[in-house]
Image (tube, rainbow, N blue to C red; front, side, top):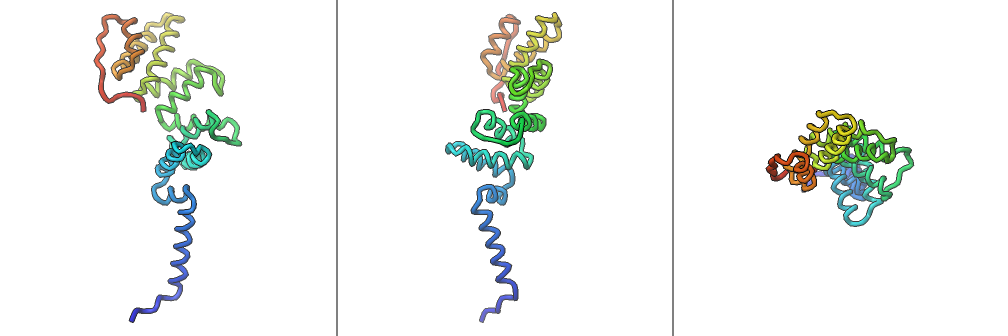
Length: 204
């Protein structure tokens, strides 16, 4: 003969079931319950791949507000291309700035690009160079090429050999990662420079 349940056990069990159901009926709740912001990001990526941008944006935003730098970057880019909306002013710049400041190389590259082009902000070559440099230092090949180009332009204007030397170094890094345009530019600048590609390198 089984023992009678303790008083209140059934109530607590029902409350637990209700809490679990609340998580399961919302994708964000389920994702957080299963694995935090990483799970939210993966769920958002699947929704985006399934052509459900509004739902994906909600998850990216939630993970972004929780501090996930990749989600901050993806949410910013969705705002930029119009597939997500925000009532907050300057939302694209602010989320992209957070992701870049958190060290995400691709976000740093996009942030630099905004300053180079004057997109969302007033153009600033010194700021663009600084953020390209940060991404380039992490092995982001496009940032290395963009940085080299700006340094060469500055060198031509000022005659500073240090900028040219740095540009050659960054072009070399990109060329070794397999960037064809960087290799061509490097060979034009330094015809005798031999470049050996390094397998397994590239953008983050």
